[in-house]
Image (cartoon, rainbow, N blue to C red; front, side):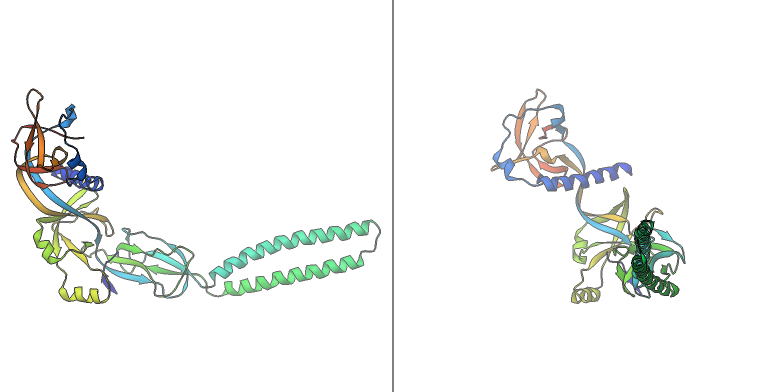
Length: 360
């Protein structure tokens, strides 16, 4: 059964830095005008060299980041019999050939056989110690010239009982071993990539038909899935791309059929958005790889920008401190625009090339 899987350099560097800063600033609460800055106005800011920035032109992108994974059409694989999971031989992303073993299960009697092996070895050891002890007692009495007939009879009786218990366990063990208890395997039906494997722990009981692995054919066209984005939302965004293993790959949004959405909703399942790779997919990308889906919600080119932490807010509005040639500081009201979390667009209040105080 095939299903859809569910569960340059400068520009790229700048984008990665922006993504990192967005995450950091979101935690620290620095991307918005917090009450802390409303309570504190820097009347006489003290400066060091790293607290001065230049108003300069550049591109600004407002980014939204969503977790995604590289997926593809895949086949669910399971065992035909019940048993105990012996081992899973593959991990997501592994390339396998047709016939390669992906996982193995032992028979339902396997646990009893393992237990019997341990019990038999333990019983043999205990029996030997007990026999040696009883034999020593009898010999000691005989050496002292005493009649040890009763002790000898008791010894033989106890030894016979011990041998009987051991023989019973050995017969049960041999019976189970004589049956076909070997290993049942799941083999790859074709060349491809392992998309997912079971989280069931080794040694746990698993029933026939329980999904154990998912395998995508090597010819399957990979795509990326992430948290659902409606088609209407997608039209509001500028572009999409994915960061996979440090590289950037342009993406194309693929709408989900409305009928399919209805079916998923009725079944109580959460829909995911799919993206196709807009260009060639690098050989190093494997199904199951993590992908940061980057949504360029807005973008402005060649606008005047300053660091976000050079902008302050009070009841009068937003302002910056402009530094003159003598080191003097002038409070200047500003009008801001788009921000990428690291820098912010300024449409009024400062000029290109002016030095601005930055709060570290």
